[in-house]
Amino acid sequence: MSPALLGGGMNPVVTGTDALWGLPLLSASGAVIVPKLAGWDRCGAVIWTARRALSMNVPVYLVDDTGEA
Image (cartoon, rainbow, N blue to C red; front, side, top):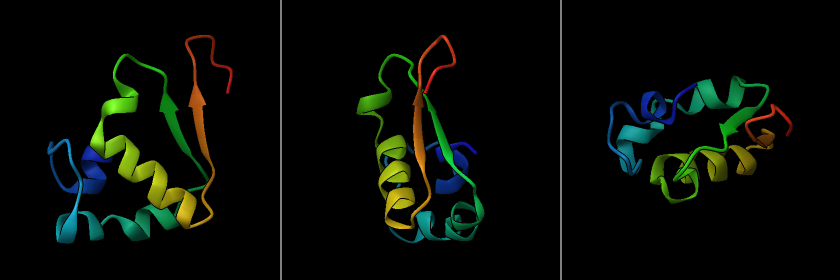
């Protein structure tokens, strides 16, 4: 699921109340997959989602262009 969806819009920094509505979706997820695209490590929404997922014991995988985690 896109961090933009979890954040309720296209805001690149997901914070506050806007981010909270997606938490049930995140907690029900089996994993978070982050494609290793240019800038992924500077995207506030990706970082927020990965950190929140890990805090909820949801695995986070960084996948490169070969599909390897």
